[in-house]
Amino acid sequence: MKWTGKKVGLALGGGGVRGLSHIGVLDILEQEGVRVDLIVGTSAGSLIGGAYASGQSPKEIKTKIDIYLQSPEFDKSSLKAIGLSFSPAPKSSLQKAQSYLLNRYYLMRAFFRPSLLPGEDFKSLINYLLPDIDIRDTRVPFYAVATDLITGKEVILSEGSLREAVLASSSVPGAVEPVRKGDKLLADGGITSSVPVRAARELGADIVIAVMVGRSLPKATDADVDTATEIIYRAGEITSNRLEEAELAGADIVIRPEVGDLHWADFARSGDLVKKGENACREYVKSIKTALREDRAVPSPGQLITGFFRKYFSPGKK
Image (cartoon, rainbow, N blue to C red; front, side, top):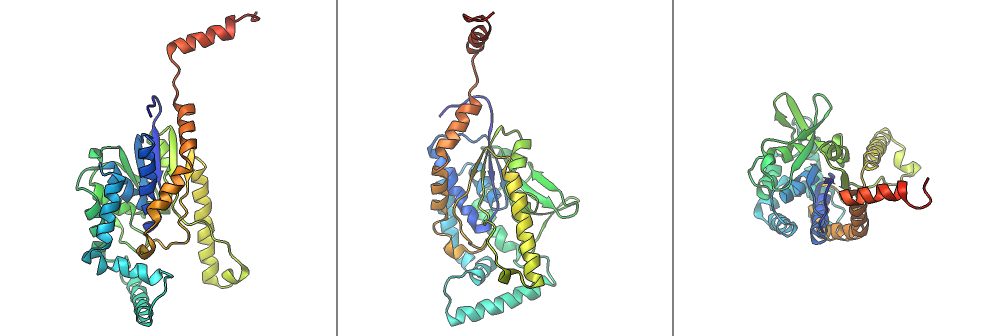
């Protein structure tokens, strides 16, 4: 499909393992010939978006992730362990005991360390998936969104190490240690922009396709908010959801793969996420193509002149 004129920006949101759905979305867009002019990613969106922007196909990205999740390196990592501890999948008595002890360990670690997970565990995934290049050298223009914990402002990373930018954008508060860059202390972009629609506009996108892989605001009952801890947690969920919806309102197309209530680190249940991304994107292919035709069609000089004469000099005009 050939289009002229305006730029299409893809805003890929954060959501941990749920971000694997982005692979399916990218695959369908590619199959349908929808050209993406720039990619902006937050957290998991920066990981998958950065891999695609560097020149890897959706199939290659999926294959790499499948191999990594079966590797001895991942098998012994804290990333896998913490995911299993939060997974609702059935556990043996031994696994339940291990999860209990692990959660106690992470709780104690949180009081003395800046993160629950050792930095090397998350870096190993990023280094395995992404080439060691400068962001400016990607095949498709790419930007990673992070948050400066010092100023509280959104930071758009557009130069320097691709791996370091994605690490900063993906540093989940409390789980992954923030990245020091000059006078900035960078953490997950989802703190300020869970789906970077606004950033895509600022970077020159005329049409923004947003992919939201966060969990929807769950319904609650009185029993869910009867303690101080539950009320604080619920208030945070509501605030995050409202900010997300406000930003998504600025997108032309919003794709929402059905990721359910999957925890961000639950890799054990990640098997069908790529397919969910494919299915969700297929539902929007017609809308995307319609938006491209309507917004990207540029009239020729001849069409402009013809339109002018029809308007002012056609029969019946005085």
